[in-house]
Image 1 (tube, rainbow, N blue to C red):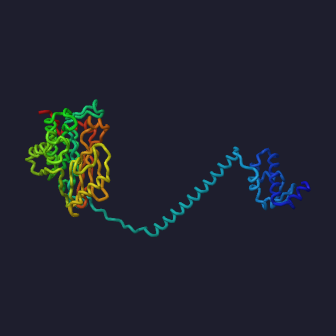
Image 2: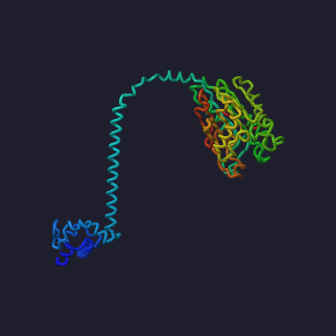
Image 3: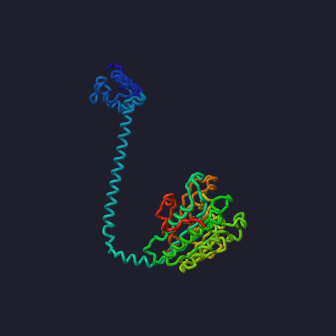
Length: 440
């Protein structure tokens, strides 16, 4: 090394020393045909023939360390470039760091699992003793002693629309399909928990709109006399099947808006709602079922009805006036339901408040437990979408009817939604349950 260089390293200020070292790094890079930023310590050591102390160019390791270290000086004077080597180094470095973190996390997790396992073994082992299994017959006998009432919600059947798929874009729907859907309901209700049948009574809630009527078009569907006759024909058979399957059948019936007499009520009725085609249908079915001594009928003239099961009160109405879920096929506002339930119960003493509200009309099956504790059941439709529904943008509807079981302490217990779809319409095995209307 030149004498000038030795004096520079020995007597110069730190800034000069750093600049000198950077200059040597640049020369090393030129000698190795590398970018200065890619020169490593071992490259620099080999270039200067450094042997852990002094070298031919006499840049001692401690001199470099004192002014910041080799990598710090290199990076300070020669900025990194996005070379292939730099990219590879960065990727390897990040991958190594990730593996270290994953390894630490796995170690911590395993340590925690072992600690939890040791704690659980020390504290909980053997705490739960083996239980003696009781024979099934004894358990079944204990369950059968509980009184039960099955509630079936029937409504929005809209009998007599005589739908054509070529007009609605949905399905063909006539007397055959009506009979099979009614049969599916009978089948599901009469086979519901047969093991408890001796302690189960049936309550049928007729929610109205059992005929299509002439609400939207005076010439829509079958003529009114046929609609009423077809509804009576089906309901008589349904009630008869229920009577044979249950020891007691109670029928609660309310009228809807499609079954109103438009000569009296051109618009939704505000009084005398019971004066309708549907009340005529109910009266005819009641008279036809006169011999069924285990069937009891309730036909209120008000726009709603009330009944009690095991000390809990149930409120039911069609759903287009006294208590509304919304327009058919539209969204149901749960907050609005709760507000209406609060208004209903505000008029009653605490012990007389309604625990359950049952409605139809909205053609959207919903079962919800409100924050005020009231259960609201919105029954689904029986009939697919008609021309009117299509005209307002409703092209499909999930048809169903609701059944649920009430037991002491649980006004709405186990429930089932009876789905009525195309598979039911095509099921010929149902023809033996309900006889199809064949005309006058």
